[in-house]
Amino acid sequence: MRLLHTMLRVGNLEASIAFYTEIFQMQLLRQNDYPEGRFTLAFLGFGPEEDNTVLELTYNWDTSFYDLGEGFGHLAIAVDDAYKACEEIKAKGGNVVREAGPMRHGKTVIAFVEDPDGYKIELIERK
Image (cartoon, rainbow, N blue to C red; front, side, top):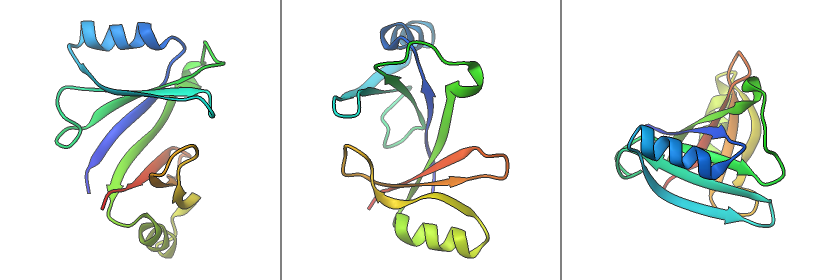
């Protein structure tokens, strides 16, 4: 297992991309629009996603501002089998808050677990 990315919700995607690329010299690795869900995902990092933990910026088209407490999204961890990982987590007393299955508006199999403080951890199936 390894940490894949940290997600932040942003109110102005262009300004956020400019900040991370210009201030921190991150590279825009990929950016995808999801018109049905009315959001855009942009992934930035210091190197390829295959080798580095990256930053995911989520821009919800209808939201231009977040309270700082709502700005943080989740951590993401790669797993071989999200369905099996959920069963193992539940068997250990963990709280699966979104069972394994394809992401909305996509095909990637994901699940979400909640830690004792309520922070979300996304499991992303990587076979």
